[in-house]
Length: 438
Image (tube, rainbow, N blue to C red):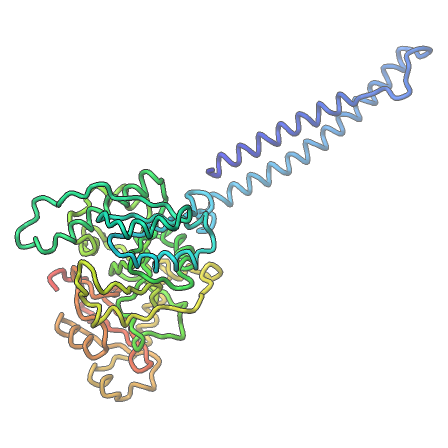
């Protein structure tokens, strides 16, 4: 219920309360011990005047008390109309965050569902929807075993995708995945009427604070128009290049990471739904036409980890990269922390100050540990695509780009750990923005 309606409701209740109080006093009005016999008209009139005066004093008392409550309600209305993130969460949109899990032909989907059920503390706040494509009976039977613990839906169109370019015929699985995503997101936002959703897949493990993380970041996503998603994933989240002592550390990033991510209803219904791609939806999301200069929130230590070596991508990156991503195992009470540092104005100021305090070192000095290990944080600069790739190889971070954006970069800056020292891979001062040809 919106704040204005809530205020009117309480006002109406108070007015009705006042009316019935007045009515009660009138009905309770008695001439205790008074009889008109033997009394003159003056005495009768004088008695009635005293009683009426007493009654109106009581009414004035009730009016004053009611007026005070109404003033408090008006003050409450003003507070609830403020820009407070928590108030916005309570009253302008639902705080229910459905989990939309995509499944196909993995009976091991139970591994993902079991973890969701294990770590979910609030059933009403985090309903689970499992959407299955492929028509794989064994997987469907596995999902059905959970009964009322989740909502089970099936993508109805199992026909072959038409008009796939010949050079992409071997990638038809990506076309089916995009079709499934489009259908299930339409269901979740347009039929289920969700205000936001967390998207996961049937090959993801989650951290103990997975739900806590998304619940705490939702108000920031809602209040900052320069954000468009929250991701649970760090592409540079291998054990040796993260700070394992800081599971509470969160960042803004210009890179869409996926692998456990949250978006809002408005983003889907007003932007993405109308132009959803036929294939390769994740790379499509990373294009400037969709990102529009906005960022996502992501963690230092991933809140998801994939175990899906076998799939449409045929294990692409799994053995070399994905299986080494560290899953956070510590519960961080994010909802009890101040998250406003992630708002753009606050975050950019802090980042700029941190970068300025970090001395610039050559990548070879870092590699050879020359005047490096005694530093808290350092910068290493790049000008070209090849510069970045050379630096990334030495530091052990991902060296590829999507629409010109390095993985996990923000304003061109990628943060990582090397030999226990924070390293900021930073574009040169003449940087003009991301180059989509990279």
